Image (cartoon, rainbow, N blue to C red; front, side):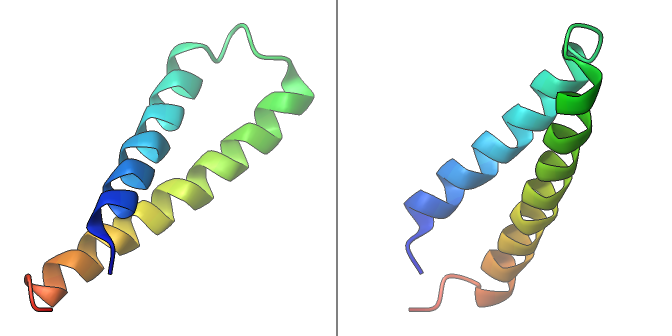
Length: 60
């Protein structure tokens, strides 16, 4: 597993979630719904990648 791309994805997923939380008042309602759904899916997958990486334990 290429860890550099997984780390970049994890950082971007959590950054997107943070930006959506901070700017929730300025995002239009129809766009907010779909962006929130995409962010939740990305954050769930990022958690999966974190758990998967911990379970691998550095094995090659």
